[in-house]
Length: 192
Image (tube, rainbow, N blue to C red; front, side):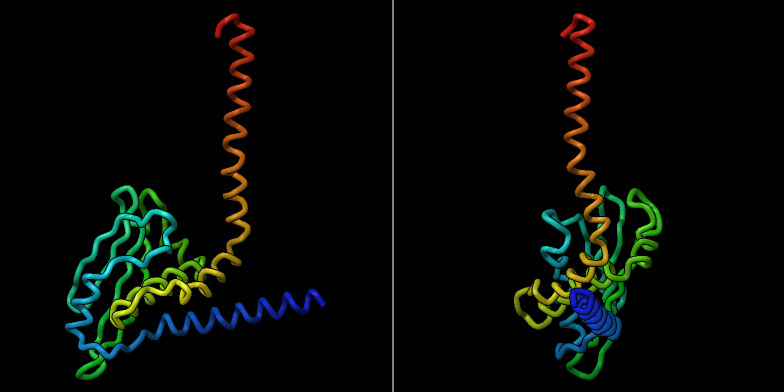
């Protein structure tokens, strides 16, 4: 009985992942002229609540009809979102977004890690696509639209998340142990 429930949950997550991946790859058509869409996106920032408590450093650039958000850490590029804008008809614009990771730098080969973890890539793409949609539809950003991708990324990486939490919890214990050992050594040597 439990195994059947687990399989149903996994199947549901897989179906949601496929739908999200297809939607993210095909782009979205907005009923906004391309010049207006381009102008709005250049003035739009990163999606909120996706990068944790601190929004990373970023900048926006233009390249032809493309709008590029470059995300940085310690002055080095981590990745960039590239929104490709194409006129669909007189008053509509198709926006397709790609995520391109840095291949080297302080954060390592982000491009390789993103290709190995499509669930993370899809989460970041879902977030920027919602940010773009909210800007072009002139409505508030709705984090709930990113939740399915966040859930899939969390489930897929639960082991790594647990290991990271365990490591963070162990650090203070290790420091306390080192402090106690140092205090005993100092006492044994007659110093304080």
